[in-house]
Amino acid sequence: MTGELAPAGPLAGIPLLDELPRLAGKRVLVRVDFNVPLVSGGTGPAGVADDFRIRAALPTLDWLTAHGAAVTACTHLGRPKGKPDPRYDVAPVRVRLAELAPGVELMQNLRFDPGEEANDSGFVDRLVDGFELYVNDAFGCSHRSHASIVGPPSRLPSAAGRLLAREVEMLGTLLAGPAHPFVAVVGGAKVTDKLGVLRALLDRVDHLLIGGGMAVTFLCAQGHQVGRSLLDAAGVAACGELLKAAGDRLVLPTDLVAAPAGTPGATAMGTGESMVVGEDVPGGWRGVDIGPQTRRSFAGYLAGAETIFWNGPVGVFEDPRFAVGTRTVAEAIVSGSARSVVGGGDTVAALDEFGLADKVSFVSTGGGACLELIEHGDLPGLRALRNAPNAPARSRAGRG
Image (tube, rainbow, N blue to C red; front, side):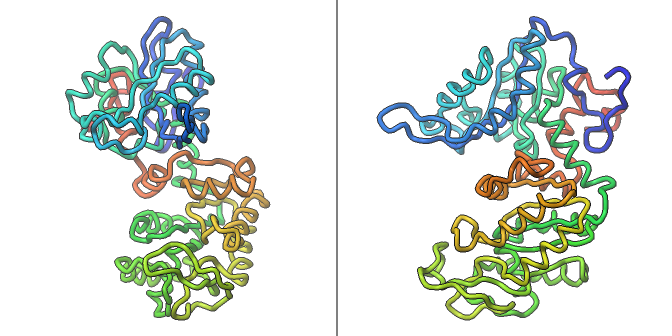
C-alpha cells in the first residue's frame, strides 16, 4: 500500500487485497459468507430469498476478476451436519452468483464434509489444492476456527477482502477511541449469550441501554416480578453483578408493554389487549416491548450520542403491535449525527422492515463475529491472516 499508512487496530498486520502478488492468471480461492435464505420454487428449483450477502461480496470478487484472477468462491449453507443434504445444496446460490458476478465459480457446500467444522488438516489440503492465493471475505464466519477460515492462510499467500476489512475497520472504531458520548443498545432474548460483550461494552460506553427479553432477566435480578416473560434464569446472578459494577451506566426499562402469555414455553402471544405496566409484570402476562416512558428515555440518550452501537431488537418487533419500541430506537439512531454501527440478523431485519437500513453509518453482516470482535478485540480468522506467509514479519513474530 505505497504512500498509505499501515492499518491500525484489529486490522494491524493483516495483508489486504492490494498487497497480494500479481493476480493475472492466478487461481484465487475466496471464502465468502453466502449462508443466505432460500425460498422454495414450488414445482421448480429453489431460489435465493435475500441476496444481500452475495451483493456484499461483489467489491472483492469484481476487483479480483478485474485484475485477471480466476476466482472460485466457497461457502457454507445451513447446517447439513457434515454430509451431503439436498436441502443445503448451493445450486440456487450458484445461479444468483452467476447473474451478479459472471465467471466466478462456487464450490459445493463446505459443510457437506465433516472436515470443515472439525478444522481437519487433510480437508484444508484438499480445499486449497490447485489454488495459488486465498482471500477471506467472510467476516460473519471469522469467529469460527473452521478449516476454510483458519487453514488456507497457513498454506497460501492470503489477504482480507474488501468486506472483511471494512467490517473490522468500522467495528475497530468502537474499540479504540470512539467519540463520546458513546451509547450502546443491546437487546435480544438470552443474556447469557451476551454477558462477555456486555462487560466489554461497559468498559467503553457512557450508557448501555438494555431491552428485549434480556431486560426482563435484569429486572428479575433487581427483585421485580416478571410474570411469564421470557426469562434467562441462568443469567440472573450475573445480571445482578453487572448492575452493581455498572452503576447508572446500565439503563433498564422503567415500563414495559405486556401481553397475555400463550401456552407455557410458547413464543406466541395471546390475542387479548396489551397493556403498559411498570417494572413488574403481572402473573399470566409477558413483557413484549419497552413502554412509552422507556422509549422517551432511550431516545434521549441516543439523541445526545456521538457514537452508537446497536445489537438486538428491544421488543417482539415481528408483531406490529410490539414493534413501537424497536422502531423508536431505530428512528432515534438515524435522526441524529452520531456514527452508528448496527450488527445482528434480527437488528438488520428490523431496520429493513422500517426502511431505515440505508440511513445508519454501517450495517455489519456478522452478528456473532461482530459481538466476538467487540468482546475480545480479535477473531480466529484475523489471527490466521496475520500468520499468512505474505503477512508483515512483525505481525507473525511471536504468534502461534
